[in-house]
Image (cartoon, rainbow, N blue to C red):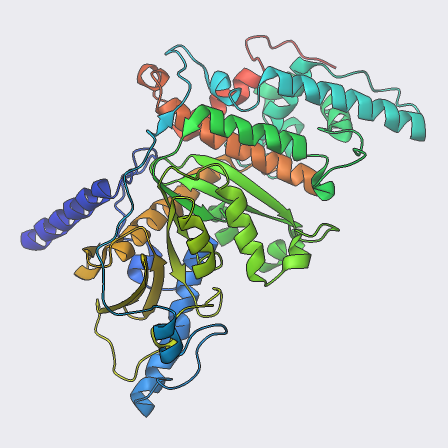
Length: 529
């Protein structure tokens, strides 16, 4: 028994050591101390329910299992059959330069140091970090646009006797009330003034419910439609998103390794697993999709890209649905600020493609992506690497083909996993370390992908602590509050990397609570009407 415990401990230490060598924070910026052995990619269970990349891994595996059973029965799974659309036959692949002769290629050193670009003093408050992204001039714009919208609305539909122009202090309090739904996990912001379980008398005194509802009715970022603009569907939120993107870039420099993915943005994972099917059906579906570029060393979200599912624009999801150019467009938008730095980008199956990775390599952006024969654009890839062979594979077995500096890897671990990369040498070996199974050999690119995606998957649970539960009907408002959640997440990361954290070591929940109190200015508890 003692030997088993020592072996598990040594495996855990080995895993953490390898994490450090891959430039991954082993939960430094989280609150739990769990190791990374429960990553669905490692366990190959297909039980993932947190984000798209993990789900795709599970789907890929479930798809492979019946194929493997068929292999045993027929001893010939598609060895001579056709591959995914756009894939190359063996002779075509040879003509295009694909070969089994491997070269030792790897990404050059990163050309930038990562970390906060602005240093706040040890006395900085939660609000100080939040206002790195939502500064006073942004608050003043909300005041101006809200009052303009209220005036125009009343000119058209009649005066509102209960309305008076909003102030900057009230807008801050308004933000604080809505953000409090993430801290206290209440479904409706109005429950603050109720007598029920989620009532919060301590903050309810700062503003009457009637005044809050008036501000909620007229709240705007852009009051009127501009005469011209590139993203008409998001015109009410686009200036705010542009300002937020700029502040993300000005306050933080990401590490070399970054991930492009769709974060978990709908609900707190705990709520999703406990609510009934009827409750889930009642919740309105989002009319937009959001992708992010996220630093894997800290969890800082460096850039966001929002697309409407329906709209008149040529870049809407309805126009580009199920087409490779949608995900290629998203990836290019997210990476537009990082050419020339030798960054390594990890991608899920919907983004991974030879054409995109080749285009990125010309900009000194290196990639490592998971491939799916159903979800990826497999144009230009050898069929022989994308279909099951007739001979059953052994766990940990891999096959590699190269074209220039690009490697196509097929690795087996209770199912076939395929990767495309030019960021890691195909000649270097890595190791997947699990508590139960021990060490599973794999190419270094596979280990790197698993480790970085594991960190991001775990990070979803931490990021969910700042989900704002207020659910407005209008799409621009949904995007706005989601963006505020991201801003709070980034503010906490900067706080943990600052001297202020050494003074008062707030947890995520404590930081959120402190931010709400500072927005509400609770040192002065005189109620407003």
